[in-house]
Length: 325
Image 1: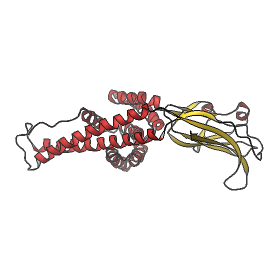
Image 2 (image 1 turned 180 degrees about the horizontal axis):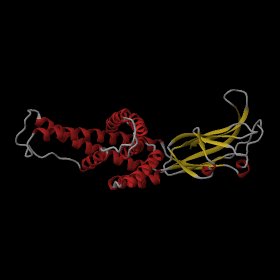
Image 3 (image 1 turned 120 degrees about the horizontal axis):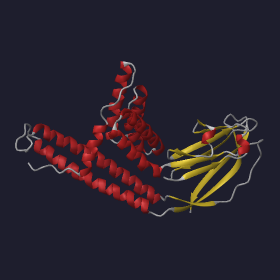
Image 4 (image 1 turned 90 degrees about the horizontal axis):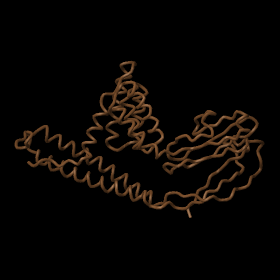
């Protein structure tokens, strides 16, 4: 048989898989370690299948039960593939610190490379709290997590998606607002108003022009993601078929113990080429998507009366409306 053609990227995939092994173990019960290992293995399988939303919680729980540098790297990689850039960025930073403590140069290099790549893509949010309001010691939360005063008026990394900011201060109704943060590399800003007694209504501010991504961008990006996922899946299938041939044939491929070795080698070649083709298509679609011009959008902020969930307290809320034109 002829030699099997293997795309260059498969070597990178194999190298990455090698880093996924050897999870560091911390002190803990034997049961916790066994559960953590099982969750880690499940997470690996789901990750390789492209089922990131299912894989990430497995790695997270494995890390909680039995913390280790290898598990943390897998969790960070999973969140990066899932699109949670801020979570992945912080986890890679934690993994880098762990790798330094463990003197693992390979993990240090891997974590550093991902940190550098994620940095420009981070979405940040600045919650501006007026000094007069800060003096009243309000409780500021982001997605129900408390923001300490040190995080006010500072650009903090957040994952893409919709978030909710809420403020509670003595003598004033609860104030909250949603914000959709989806533009990579952008810093979003929310100005908390001076909270006083509830008012019946408030003015709407004038529109402000900004720019955002078009529908074509998201369609191309979705297609790129589908193509790249297909590339990973077929690449893994090629590796599996090639491994079967290597396990059952002499290195020269002139003798094999199993009759279906030729079919396996053919499948491996086919999967390898499909993987390469979909990788090229996916990368090309992603490049074209990011070359598309930004679309003009109209953003206006309004203050309007609202009612608390329990219906007992009238308050004031801040809304953000975004519309393309």
